[in-house]
Length: 238
Image (cartoon, one colour):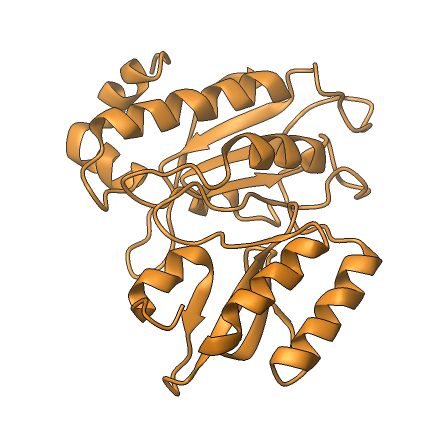
């Protein structure tokens, strides 16, 4: 690690701090979920290689600050020993964010089930720019899915029960982003099952791989070519 530039370390999950001497190590969770044993081990790693601090990112991952450059490899290996990985940054499909609609009293769909499916299938896939996916279980929209490149909202079951994976209960939103430039995503298509939601993500990714310019996110691509063209490209009608 000593011969690698700081900018080249960031895609691996090592982010230089303001002081120039330490790094934050980003640890990817499984849609915000870690076991108590994993959290205990991460606490030990933070105490040994940092200053004992751990914080949560806005996208439900874990960060360990105050790690010296010479310890980055050891921290990475220690994290992997407990079944987790460092990373979740760069021009990739970022770790999926989902609310706890699966267990929430308001939840209309299995948000964690869909989130884990999408995370396992797509997270880390390289793209021209980052792609964020958000899932919320009801119109309360705790996960702010319209501010993600791809968002899914649970919207079904008159009984109020959480829908199964085969039921068409997810409304899809495309083109959102948040940050220095922000854009509100819009609903597209009909309600989808979990498998259909995964198929839509695959189609969007393939479209971006073929059509997006370097650094161009989905919302920016929509602004450039128009929503109708993007929907045609992924097999949806307006």
